[in-house]
Length: 390
Length: 164
Image (cartoon, rainbow over all chains, first blue to last red; front, side):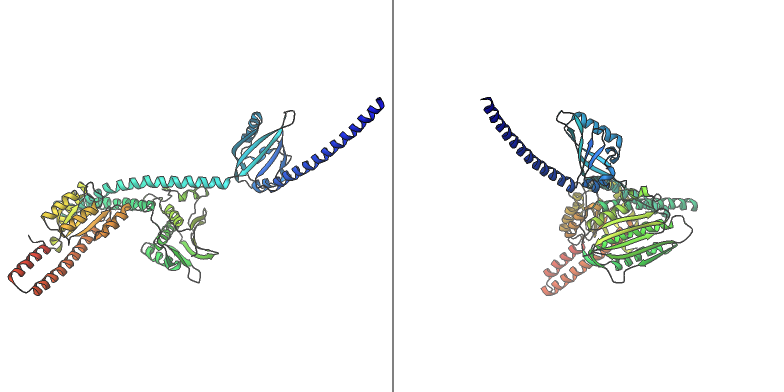
């Protein structure tokens, strides 16, 4: 009986063993599939996916991480994850916080690219635990949102600019009326003085000069309010076919009366073939006048030698470029971003309104083009206008 | 005496101080000037006396510059209107162009420019007046020289030249 029984249980054990090993190999295959699947995600995701041990030491760094931050995986695995962050202390406390909280944390965090740039990432931090519930490390999935961030900042900037514009135009309108009154009063004053009897020659000269100065200053105010209102007015460009080289020459003619007494050389370096584009002639002329005026100011500002301005045109692919370069004192790197800001000016009072370049930028946006600058302090500045070829 | 002494100018602007000084200057220049401080007042003035050129501010409380101009033209069809506009109101200015404004000038106005424009507007009025005169004379010839025809024609001419 016993023997029989044991034979029976032997059989059943063997059976169970076979079943288990079948199950096991099934699991193995499944595991291999899962691992291949995960590997595939890790290798092909554009996101930076990393894993750290409990001390924050990187144990895995995805291919996407190399694309986002510029480090090859084998260069950073083994070092602490906080070297990737732009502020390592902040990142470390973040990791600790997420570990304490457990589960997943989602937030925005700036990392630093291998070349030093800040890379903004949308980060998901997941705390890893083993079956006993012990913390064994973290996994992070980080998406590069730098471009999106910059876009967002641009939008805010444009919004703010529009708001400033609206406020400024309201003020300009209100200022215009009393300005007109002052203008008339000073004109009348001038007339009265010219006719007055019993004034000594000296007094007459003094008063005439005073009224002339008042008129001149109101003219200056008017130039500002008109320019400002012109900036805010949202007129659609009227497109026509125009010859860029002709436009450049016309603009120079326009400025000729001002330029002829100045010690500077203006050279044209234009392509041999004429360049024709569909654009708004008046708007482009305004851009050229503003850029030329700036260049003239830049090269005549307290220097003993002759200033040089060069106007260059070129065709590059589907765009044309007009480069206006000067050998003035240049713009310090920290100020280069500010020159397109409304009311930013480095010119002496009365010479610059801080409107010229924002107007240029605004116009080029309307015309589907772009304006950029390159400047080296001490060497000069070059503004490049890009326009699409029709 | 300068030719400006013949030009009768109607000024319309709610900015009283501005008109006070502007009229003084224009008077000194030799123009005949009437200052009014609203569209309504201007239309009333125009039904009492004849003017050659009106200088009308676009933005006024009550009836605005465009409407003022329309009503002035109803009373005096040959009157030339110069419309003063703020920079942002180009659209309304163009609309007033459709109402036959002679020209629109940006505020604050440049005085010399205004004087020039008033003279040009006056020239245009004189030309229109002369054309109308020729038309009327031809009409008299066509109608024959009957006493009633002549009287009627003279009345017409009075109206054209604004002789009361």
